[in-house]
Length: 113
Image 1 (spheres, helix red, strand yellow):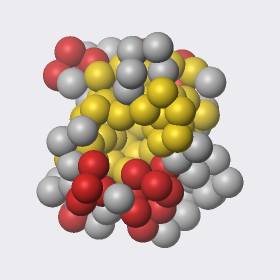
Image 2 (cartoon, rainbow, N blue to C red; image 1 turned 90 degrees about the vertical axis):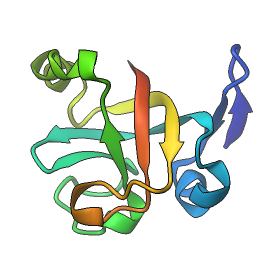
Image 3 (cartoon, one colour; image 1 turned 135 degrees about the vertical axis):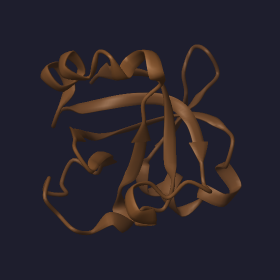
């Protein structure tokens, strides 16, 4: 999966983003996955990976912009455990909660798929 959207930002497979995180560091991209917005589990994971899976190697940490944090309950109601497309900037140097994840995506926008 590597398609360009109308705005020229590529839609990449989650596994590709994780596998190429060093190369994609600082790049704006789109990625699809199942979203968790829980305490200590703000992650994007493959749709087939169970929510409580401890396999953090297949997840990205999700960093919400400050403005979105105030709307966290609304975001949880709308998107928690849903398959979404995230537009964001990859940060390969931020490994999320307890430095356990491959990288972080700094969210610009979230939309349902």
